[in-house]
Image 1: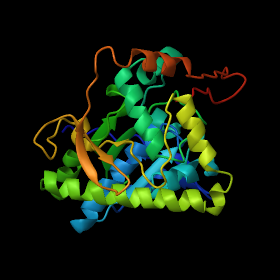
Image 2 (image 1 turned 180 degrees about the vertical axis):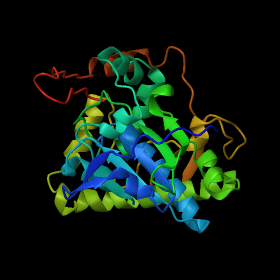
Image 3 (image 1 turned 90 degrees about the horizontal axis):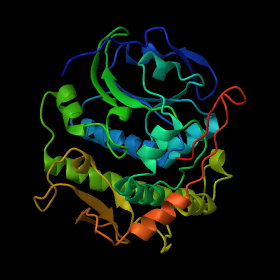
Image 4 (image 1 turned 180 degrees about the horizontal axis):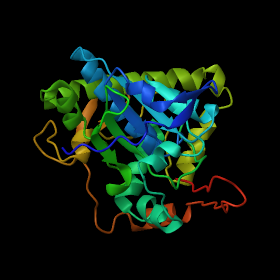
Length: 319
């Protein structure tokens, strides 16, 4: 993979405590996975964050130490929702001007591009239902026009970017390639079985964490209730039957996004979790004629609020 020039040597961001800090110091001495978050409350972004955390667990098992840094243009409250909702085990930095995103020239979507990307695809709408069920702290707050990406670089503040995943270059449900990143960092392949075990462990831990947080929210998220997830489901046309701790939603893995083989030797499947936290491989397929009315209703339920940048520094699109 061709390396890219590191554009963040002089970028200054803020910690969650509000202190200014130079971003490049994060990879001065350590290999770093840098995640430029599109929007902290975005369920797609929390899903991408969870995939990076699966990579972290794989690298931890291999005895490889890396830094994990997420940067986004939101408030501390929004970043805490990302921290607890993912859950994100690395550092979170705030960048109100999206200087980090601009430095890499990451695309800003137009209203039409965002609509087409997130709402005019039946596959994406079906995928988003699973995300809203799984990521209970997701919301529709913030600047959804900015795209994000995942990068590997370091050590050395001016080191080249060795791996890059540019969100806008793929479909809405695409995520970074855990297998390619693992091999780049460790020099060996991550087997399908190794990954599947890690994925299932992380999914189970995430389910347990969400249950604890929804029954006893962290202090910084005290205003969050289960009503938030219910509202998200309504906005996406998702009617969930709440049966306690289950996340019967689709929990996609990098297997699904990169065409890798599942348990039964087929590709394009998805891992789902039931009440007993068991994982099974299910094929994602669109049944002709069976979902047109549902898809139409989902599109009708889409609510969009656009404010001009002259009135508000953040355009808002509810995705």
